[in-house]
Length: 265
Image (cartoon, rainbow, N blue to C red; front, side, top):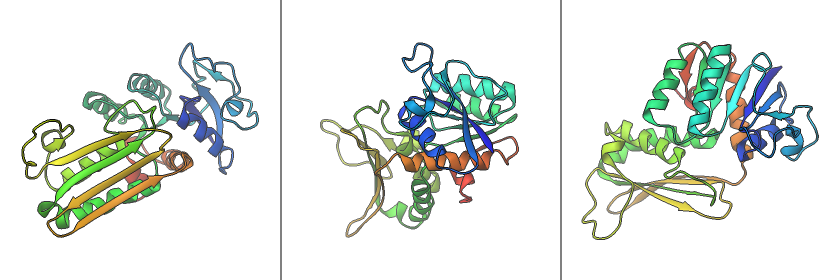
């Protein structure tokens, strides 16, 4: 039995993971954490997630001996605090927090020298299969097409482009030997002139309750290839996160992604 600590337990992903864990063999939520001042502190994590009581109260501190893996879907600042906590206690960390800076990612890689860490821009099995397909498409037609990344999310999402959109863009850029900070186009307004050759464009849509939609378009003169993933239920992300947690406890210290978890590289 793998004991799980859920950081951000009352958030969308935290609640989805708690619900999914109740249906998943071999895992058990034994700790649930929220920020100091959260109105959900003291509440049973199961009730907060919309299921029956699981006997775990949401707290703003953790018993460091009470879990094997922390699943963290919070904010960049909180994630770095949780990563240090896991490192100090020798516990594995799976984080799906987006919006991390390059410096914060580097810090995670340093921490991963001591504990196993999975950093996942998206825990969906389908989206990670799309990453593998994008590598092939980019090598075959990336040099002769214009490339656009389009993503859509619910109205509450606070970062844009999404972490998944950036993952897809970085996949394309790496396959083509490009640099996303240099070749990515993240805003178009006014008289922009012609599209720069070799650029990777991004567009973000926000509205309603869209769980997550991503399309990468390879646009040629006479044809267009699109690789699309649409999520209709947050459950798929929870399933992927739990799959990562189960895989992670068998690994040595190191810095991993969902591509590693799924055996795609």
